Length: 317
Image (cartoon, rainbow, N blue to C red; front, top):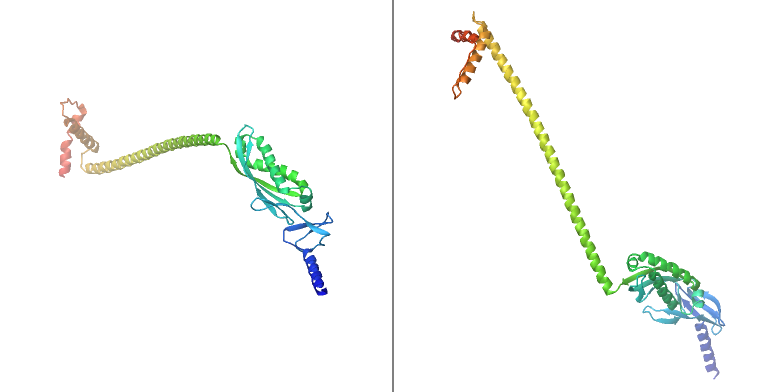
């Protein structure tokens, strides 16, 4: 009988000791109450409490599936709450559905347990009411384009309100903003009209640039053509000038040779000879015309023509 009692006593002692051992995971903590009064917080690792006299305080936590339950473990990591969509009325009286993501972290577990009875629900309701107030001060267009502004205002208000609960709100993100179907259709038509307007503007700008480039091209082409014509005229004039110089040099050489040849003939005058040649050439041009012409020769020309006989004798020699 005594053996059984001893075994029972040993079992009770073991159960008592085991019930006083608490294992706390990393990034978690537990609050210990002694005789119903806060005593201490336990850190990560193995902790020992006095059963019956001390106990771990439980609190309400939100599970991954969104349900609420009680637990003695307080998570000190940053947590995220994904709230369901809620209807919000904007300043211009448009009913809009908005859902938000809230990132927060418990920094003081004692306040999170003793300053608020249901922390997850309190944060959710506070976020919803604050979101309604912030969006209610803005029009729909501003709401759709000012998410950063809304996030900043929400974070400031929530962080200030939850500071009493030992919670730090790190950021708030608007996950989705859904206006009514009629508003969405109107916005789609407006966006389509805006796209068409931008397309027309771009098309007009393109045509304008094309015309400018074409005119610039034509201008440059005319400049190049004028420059080419100028160079051609310069080259043509230089060629004609060189041709005249060469022709003059050739005539000069011919005259010198004729003068030398005529001068070797006694009694022959080179000047008369050259004048006679010019008269003959002029008479050939006059006689070559198709119409009858009356030609008047100067009196002195008859004397010059008489030198033709001397030219014949000159070439015979």
